[in-house]
Amino acid sequence: MMLYLRSGAFYVGFFLSTIIYALFGIMAYALPFRKRHSIITNWSDVNLWWLALVCKLHYRVEGLENLPDRPSVVMSNHQSTWETLALKKFFPSMSWVVKRELLWIPFFGWGLAATQPIAINRNSTQRAIEQLIRQARQRLENGRWIMIFPEGTRVAPGKKKRYKLGGAIIASKIQVPVIPVAHNAGLFWRRRQFVKHPGTITVSIGPAVEPDGKSPAQINKEVKHWIEARLEKICAPDA
Image (cartoon, rainbow, N blue to C red; front, top):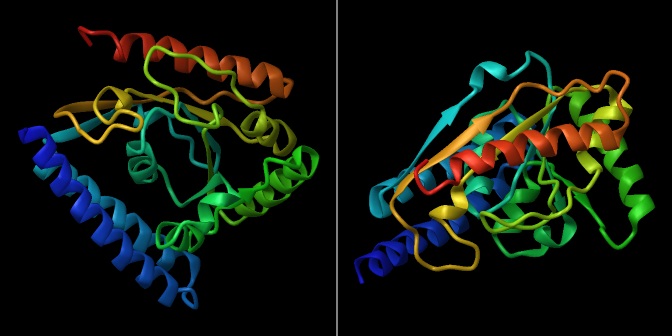
């Protein structure tokens, strides 16, 4: 019962903060991107703090020393809603690759739009790839990192799904590194589950995968191998 009460309290704060920060984000459209980005990042900070306070769900990060000193593509596994809140904290200014339907969600989508994501139409594959490369190049040239979930949807711990090539294509075409990320948030904040379980989420940032002389398929395979190998360790019962 206490887990349900704590989780309910979290969602009350989460939805209220989403409405407030979305309105701030809309009013801040005339401001420079970095100002708008800082508002949305602060929304994440507030909700992670609230999550730790009421649900006793914390996190730890390892591998920050692996981050290069230039904008790169980040490819992470996707288990939960938690990483959509948290991952922006560990990297410089980011643009997320998202399905365009997310921008239509009231308040949440409005705030997301303020961060200038790369919103693609997944029903038009070739046009989506062309748009992805064009906008990713623009974002990278402006000093922003690209964040993408290659699985395309949330996948429960212990399950596997084919990695899409989008992030690897960006890296290959534009010649930027890929930073693989593995986390076990799905053990505590499960897909389509109301209850948030107490504990400590582990986020592992891997060494950069350089695109030199590699095809998108080779890059994807290398990233997938690192993420899945790390997941076996951090998702193990005794981890």
